[in-house]
Image 1 (tube, helix red, strand yellow):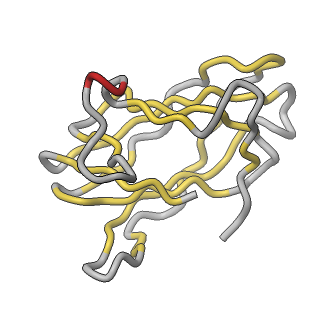
Image 2: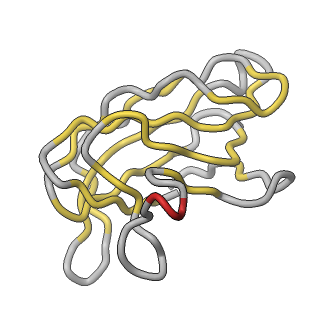
Length: 130
């Protein structure tokens, strides 16, 4: 999953996810950071970092992700399959970034500042490798 963000300064981004990860075979995935080119392509500049979410037998907020170093401007965060962890929602808990709204601009307080949703309550995203 490629997630565009806008950072106001060089920062270390940290995330939490609403995950279902009931055992040690389903409780982690990779995260990495990079930037978007002018033609909208993703260029990842950090190595894959392992994010251990903790065990959750029902959807619950995960542990905080490793710090993802990002430059100022339009950047991208990648969530990459490591195990079949299921994630419904994602929020920024650290760093000077906001998720970009797919309709343009950033998500502001009226849209639950620093928050993005992957779907409704019963929608599940299983991360796929790329």
